[in-house]
Length: 225
Image (cartoon, rainbow, N blue to C red; front, top):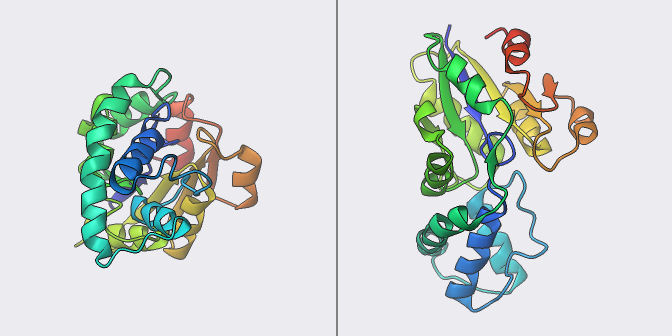
């Protein structure tokens, strides 16, 4: 039976050192002449498309064709992101992540995929910069929808084709990830390596909760992978 592992990116696999939010603010300023446009907009665990919509709403910016605006914003954001990743001083791969992925990659019954609110190109830029992109076969990304539960549903539909009996693990660092797993009858694996406390994650009742992946062998054993 296939085990589909759907990984979040920010706070789960890497910390970008603020490169992502800085690039978004720069893109928003370039396109709409609003500095700090994402201040007070919730970003942790959110879909990039939804983040953009929230920022536009906050500043009373009306777009006649939102999909076209998403495409334009994505292009400008990714151009800035390529630079802000290099400039970030404290971005890093999180503890045990590289070892965990290296151990999982050869397993024939495991598929490593992404289910992230990042735009596809943004996820590729971040994970390529930190040497992790090559571990993943495929994924669903922030262009797909604005809701994380819908993102997981799309991943199950598109990535489990032909193996509907497979097990799905949603691996992330926010309550949004846990709730999305619950909405899709998936196994919720929470990790407190991002900006959500272990206590907050525990209160959301994930199936598994780890402080981080530094004990990657223990993680494999707990998940029976």
